[in-house]
Length: 509
Image (tube, rainbow, N blue to C red):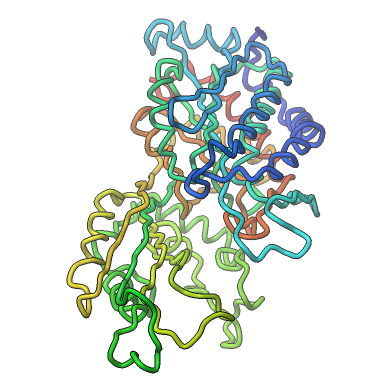
């Protein structure tokens, strides 16, 4: 084991140089191969086990990790019956860090502080609209951006995690025990992960710091800490009127349109003029500290809050000739996408292609609904309310059904303690020349709620590379390589700060 080096002697410039070299020589070639494999999450590939893509990407990652020869690293692929596989690795604490933790006596004998590093390797489906020279399974590096499905969300995480560990060990810097969980079910709601965590609970240790590399960034100019995540409830809403399609001229005016009934039913849920969700139970108050952080972030990002998206028109100015966001106020925009419930229709059935659409009154309309919920709203209760709201008292006594396809509650980060905030700022200043920013995210990472409950004293470093126009889940998804390199070095620096806190009850008690 490496002898302990005081955290103050950690060399950020050296770490960034070594991390950059690792990315260029060892990580990018692996990500090229990873992107080329259509390792779609089980929700989008019912035959994932027989197709073998998830197994393939996880085994490739495991082989790569083993090839790095990290001192003391042990690794296995955990396969529970009927579950998606999970990559688990552990690296023992450096001798100095272990001695500091044990001598404090703030934790049970033999239990050392652990860092838990998390990522996933399952992917969203292809989607349409990719640039002509790009594709979901065709990696392409252009202007520092690696295009392709899954590179940024979240295939890079396991490679960046190991590179950060190597940067620590290369300097002989003290570091805590480090464990890693890389799953293959995140894009389906992580329903397979909790049983795996239960099976591994005795090996995770006393987690003092969670590093999740599956989140976003407000810009590419500083380190960003995710402070909250919205929850999600999804399902299929179906309105059936007829058993088969009929001539529209013969039936319309007498037979109600399933699409019109669908609009009436959705009007119970959403004000279509404003997008506001109507049930009061789907809303919550924004905590004062999150509101203050949002104000600070709005001052940093300004118009970038809404300009970051690929609008149909290229200007979001005041002219009516251009597509406008729901608000151009940066603060309100941040709150809308992180603390407000929203409805998206992400798929539809019952519609023929336009070129094949005859004059037929269709028998049914089905919509895939994606409901984003504020961080403090219970998703399971929301699903129950949603089903009753949509199904009860159907117009024209049509057959209206809502089938839930999963729900995950959101997450509000625990308060950050002093050492953690200082370490984040120091890492951001060292690698970006700017302080760490704080931002809520509109997406969902189901694991975070699980970990907060399981390790209530742990600090949560939730961050990621999904910055402006990176477009995870959509076409032209890209990984911003220079940002990923600096983020990797910043992660190493924050981990180096943890052993210095082993004698502080604030951080580890």
